[in-house]
Picture 1 (spheres, rainbow, N blue to C red):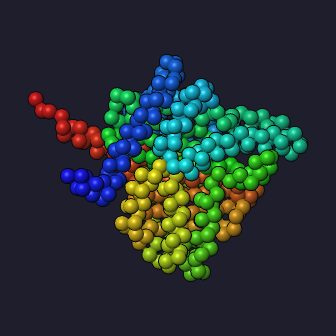
Picture 2 (picture 1 turned 180 degrees about the vertical axis):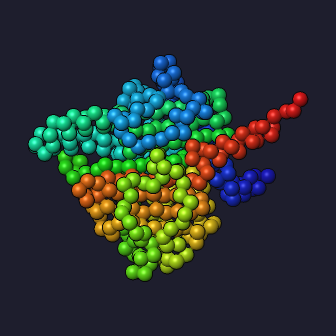
Picture 3 (picture 1 turned 135 degrees about the vertical axis):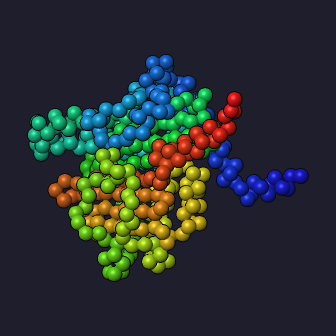
Length: 359
């Protein structure tokens, strides 16, 4: 009798793993909530229907206030528990990128203070910059619904250059949209000189565009200036309808492999079982329906942008800066129709309504 069970486990590990993964995330979230004093619980808990859950921005706190609990106000015990939550929904690379991005806010603040002390920027400029409230602790987290009692709930961690959005519905969860940015993209001063939180997003992009022959490169490259931000920024439509650039089926095997590395860099930020779900879908459909487009320079430290677009997912990357020195990355990963768990929540509601008794 044991052999069939072992066979099923071997053939369908993902089906068993996803449910277990949600249970693990729920357990970590409940443990985190239990570390919070009542006033922080009241501050951090919002309704699943609250529009706060489905709004996002990458602006610093000084330009866009957030709801929820300030990360820096958490006790050490709560911080440890929250790190457990994040390490259950992110891979090690995604987890480390998240906190490198937060740390870069402290570094960015220090870099401008150095420039001010050197006389490179004036009093009005440093006053404005200080008002942006760049700080490792100045990120906010909110818990939508209650993981202890609700089948639909979520967690949001957001601040400057970071918007992480977990939505759980039954035994499924979504992690889209996932915005990661870094300013500077490469730290050029202080003891942290050389730090690059989003290194492979940049390196693999250049690797791919420069691996194309001239005809392919011309097809992949779109005219016009580099966008000042990702195109699906908070103030714009959240999906691109038009496919542009070069199609994956027009790439040779080696070029497709580089494109796969680049896509995997984004998917690989998620915990492994979730990443495998997306990779399985990618492998089943192949590269034929994926488009890659580029705008701007083919060299680092000059403004450039790329988009990877398929019927199922969207990746955008933008690197612009001041005075033609591109050292400021914005990037986003999206799953079509499932921003803030839209698709899984819809399915859950339909199943719930269908299962309700009629009197």
